Amino acid sequence: MSDDIWKRNEIESPCVRICVVHPEARLCTGCLRSIDEIARWSRMSAEERRQIMAGLEARRPMIAQRRGGRAARLARGQA
Image (cartoon, rainbow, N blue to C red; front, side, top):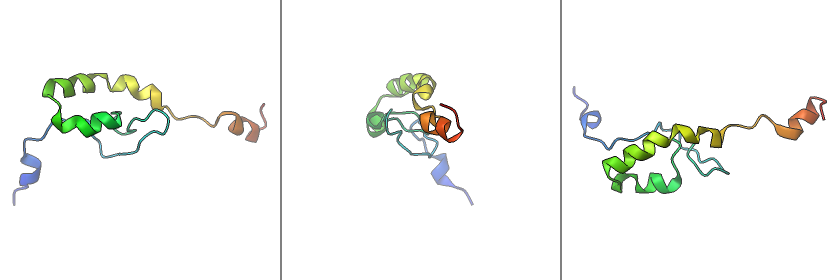
């Protein structure tokens, strides 16, 4: 049996199906796109999508997880 769904000519996308928006950066933590980019993705030209995809990894520091900050230091007995 053939799976025609996965043989379609899909729009190139960085989506990794981890769709969680970072509350401060307002970027998807899975694909690193903004909400606006995700909403417009299917209407963008292939070149516009590739330009965005080329810059996505540079956004990763914007969503780096915090290590607990002051509250974690206090819990460990550090000031």
